[in-house]
Length: 299
Length: 256
Image 1 (cartoon, rainbow over the protein chains, first blue to last red):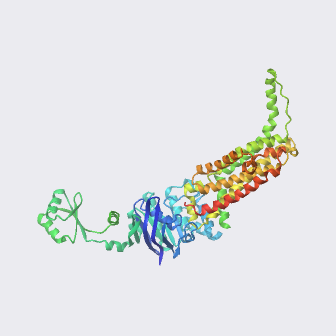
Image 2 (tube, chains in turn brown, purple):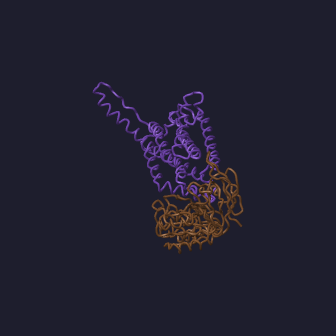
């Protein structure tokens, strides 16, 4: 079953159409990377899922239930971490989690137990200071703790790593991987290396729609194009190759690429051997997320 | 109910740790002392003046001071208390809009009307405690130095001013659900009060306006009868209820 399903979602702010008939399906127990440029509509989509914004048209279901704007009952299935989570600065981490437990209706014993577990999980159990003095990374970790408090079926994280240093990023990614057992994770990002590290499924959001989505491995296979990269030592050698094979594309200073359908690999190698061109490397290119992303964005 | 208590506890903690509770406490006690103190010092100031005036040939006869003078000062000084209260508490909603702290609570399935109720409970409690503390201090001093029995309609006049404060609280909440900035709230509340003062210049409708309730002085001198305030009290009570109902309805649909 799909934990989250979005069909024909449209949202316009004034004259700017942010979402233009978005369709999205997030299967259960996956780590779903929601990829898009800044301003592509990722945060808007998430706010619509949470019922914080009103959709113009379209339908969203979470765990099979329809999302309503304003009084959003489906939020009981969701844990949410905004891009810059803000907490009450006058509370300690423990007090804040306790407050969250109270408003989600956990009983006293459960609330205390869960609070302790989560602070332990995110590494804030020894922290006795008020949130006012927390660093961004600490706030982000507390954000994950509060999002996981009521055992959500869907954890939504809005660019959880964008504002963090490499250490903070690593910690957050590891946390997200660790909670995958318990919940479905949907996270938006424009950092592609994060996606490669932890995501099982992805969707590329561009111009308010997600044309490309599915299992990351499937998408990569689908976009594999038997492409080769040849890198020479200097420009003169590169010119020799280009003369022989005008259909090669120059992709770097001393780098050419070509695909199998334009000409045979062996033919190229023969030429390299005949003309004794020294090579730095020759490789079969795997489609990277970056190339996929660029392809989607430029389409 | 548990959710509501948690919210109220959170609001109280914020008032306490931000120092607002302390500031309000000190302010209202000081204002309570200020009324009787001014009344007590008046003869002394006159005496000081009398010496210098006598040299220029003017004589000032000493005026007898009673508890009435202390209460007249109380009603005058109350305006400062009201303005300070509104300034200190006008951000109770907008602070949360601007920092985004409400979003997390609401995405946990918190019902929106409870936010409005919890904040209303805190504002009404703070106003009530602060106001009656202030009145209590004045009452104590006035009883100690003079005799409160010469003051007519004391409790009723105090009740009227307290209702005026509640009206402001209701307006603060209403404008907090309409506006997203502190300035918007202050402008809304200030605008409503100024409008009421301006309309009070038209004699035909002045008895129906909320600002009439701030005129405690006429009541304690006995120059106005409590019955003259009934219409205004009923209208204010109705406006308070309407503001609360509207606030909840608006807040339920507010984009955060």
